[in-house]
Length: 230
Image 1 (spheres, rainbow, N blue to C red):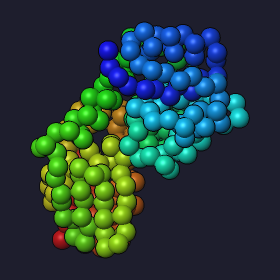
Image 2: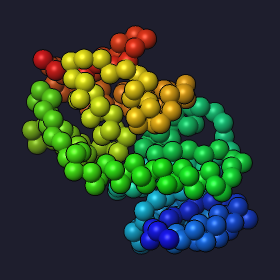
Image 3: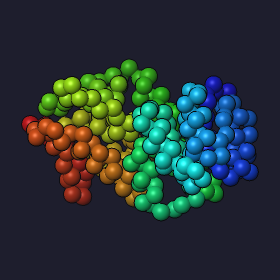
Image 4: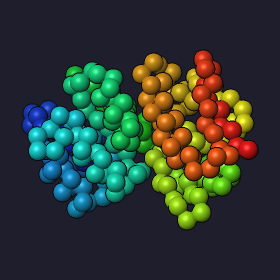
């Protein structure tokens, strides 16, 4: 039994109660909230290892709640529950900083598998001694272990996926990072949807790196991406 605590925000009381009971049975202390405002208050009162947020909730929706959580904590894993199938909605969630999405209806087993996959990824990022690397990108310093991109006195805290992607780009500096390699290493799947979500992260990294003209993050059409440092 893993000693982890989960914040669950789900306005469907029947589904929320079932999910809570299942997670508790699997060994996870789980706090259930029925709207985003209540969930944010709970989040501020306790320390959690994951947030599972329904997108469509009254008073405060899941996207708004996730953004407020991300403003305070760039690292806590966030998994969205959604009845929506629109890719634009999912991309919006990833842009906010979601770690994963699961569409209703779903099985309890699938939810648990996705949760464990997120925790494995986070644990490997923070505990592996081989991933305590610091990279110099022109005027920037990227501390992978701290997930921090620094230029002079300005610091940009990265999400886990942003840090993973930037690290891969640094390992291929001035060379092409194959799109499929990045997708399989970070998303574990090179599907079209994951490729679209990766494009969101590339756009965000490009924005973070724009202050140094000697650093460029280029699209290599049909192949992948290239981090060029002059």
